[in-house]
Length: 139
Image (tube, rainbow, N blue to C red; front, side, top):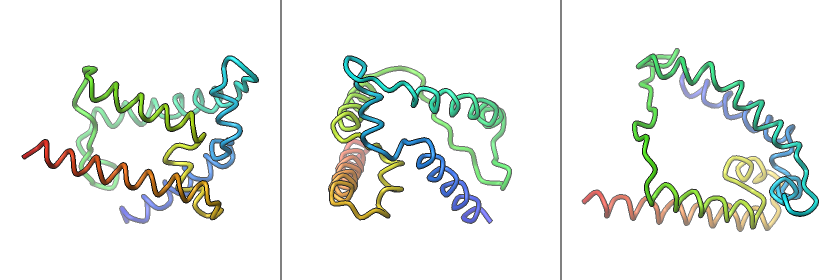
């Protein structure tokens, strides 16, 4: 049941990204181009996502289990540090260069565009290096 719920949540998320234009790199880059031909329409998407997420996030903070009985895994860390800031900068730079972030990249894999395949491959390599660095750091 948990895997089925995860599948449908991912499907709804992916469809939402496609409908909102978040999977269109040109639209994302136009949103990020505040000094040029800025397209503010994705700000409405972000505002809508935040407003929809407030209620379940508050519910999740008060409960130890999901509705399906799985353990809640919310971040416990609240402070800013160099790793968080550096990771955020790296993510933002990649997003600004490619116009794609991880969620839309997965949805765009179905298009088989070579640019998406390169981005997705680079994302997997980055995830591998992060895991390797984290395991080295833990030991």
